Length: 379
Image 1 (cartoon, rainbow, N blue to C red):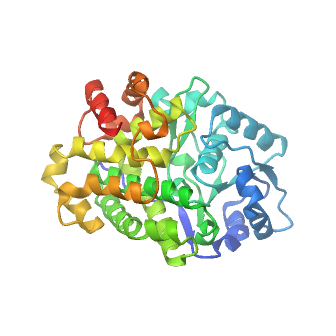
Image 2 (cartoon, one colour):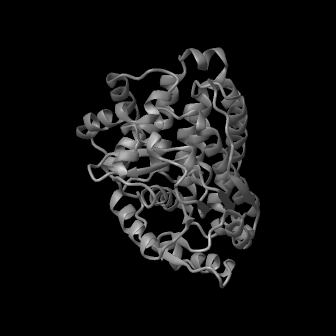
């Protein structure tokens, strides 16, 4: 059975952060916890958020979000949420802050450790409507977590897992491209490639969801045409707007599921949390596309040709190579060896990938040897 479900109210415009007060009132949040990181706070963005709230709001702030959010950070933020008697969360930042906020929203309102809510532990059924409401304000254009139904978090045992439930979908997403204008070029490129990976991989996923397919292709069209401009010309408002839209669209679409790109990057990101998720996705995409091109659903529905059309390519065979070329032009690493990964790590990466929730929604079943081959092709 196909699940087609879009439930987040999205406010999308330059200066949209001014709507935060009314969104809190609509949702019923009067004592918010702002979940962010120190870089976002230092950049003055948290001050803009505080200005958009009314004097009646009693606000607590947690700014300890790490680049790859983990269980320890969830516990710290939950303690702040409980101590301040918060009734909702405002996530301000990239996917890390938004995912951490989702983990806090669950753990602050349910009994049990974070592990018990991981989808691979059967945790989806343990998450209820008691989950604290979240308003997400993204400051990057990559993960699309502001409209996603899941959070990717690292457990204390090192596993990078998904906490997935309709109840963790933010009640409101305030997408203000103005907040991305000062994003550094490398981060613009890496998060932008993350958005491209989401659009491509969810489009190739086998689930029947024509709405998601259409959203993914349009998101890819926007991202592919604007990522270089946004990276080279950070003040280009048209490029920033289209990249933020592509990011949001990729996450709207990936309710279909993702695939081997993400099972590999989740696994490797758990092993070495210093590695950027979007960069890893860009590195893995060409090898995974080559692996998936013979999947029945990919062949029968002409998926490579449709991806090529969205990217402005005449030959579908050039989709993977063009992604590698784009990654290089953006100044990002194109190989695993270029980010410090060694072949000695392959066995552990494969072990984690086979257990990842994205593994199950790839259009072609991947074995351990298939994953080793993809790693070698990406090395």
